[in-house]
Length: 308
Image 1: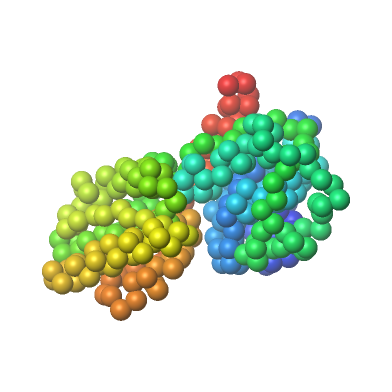
Image 2: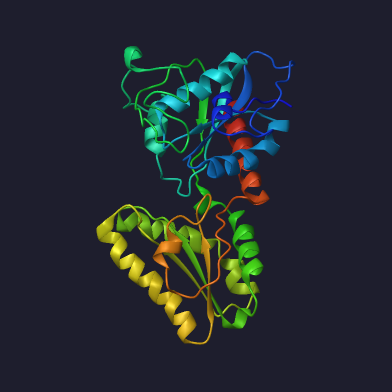
């Protein structure tokens, strides 16, 4: 296999997929991949590892958990460069392509705005100090990393990924008993501003075409919870609960599908006391997410090869 997944992940995730054998045929200046993901519990992180692992047969891959944290990005880039990588495609495994894009571009030096790294405040003891392990809080450090590599940065998120239509369809069909009496609720985290929230909803709506056109579900609704903004969240929760309640009141059932990278988030608490059906899986695990990551990698490698 060609890659070594982040060595420091072994500290918190015990899995045969956590470390992949390094191929001795690597040459100076070859292409590598950095996958960025939010990070969470051991289960959350393992889901990302399992999703990325199939690509390690063909690509040298590292992971950086955290929401555009300069520490984890620096460490992942350094590991790639130690193996001779000089061209790196950075895939951001986030729902929205807008999430942390500018900040990441600044950290990588693709755009101006990130300050120089202050060495005395940095550390290399990954998994310890104020950086912490995945799921244990991130430093959210912001500085331009030290690197000799050339970068290409993905622009799209999973909300814009056509492959997610397959995930939604498989989740819905896995829950369905009688689609003519079922209302499908696709529920996402959501951003702060109303304009960006409408873009989230429109992008996810585009992934529901197969559900709407090929299967006789009674209705399909995309909603966001606006989870981190209390003044937005109150109304969002009311709307979501009303949809689920109306499904039951009209003799049907709500099928709740989270449009999250992994897991069900706070939705069980939000829907407490209501009748609905859910498997509580996010977009991963599903091979279509792996396929999307690979498509991004191919695009980024082509950009680096052609200088476009």
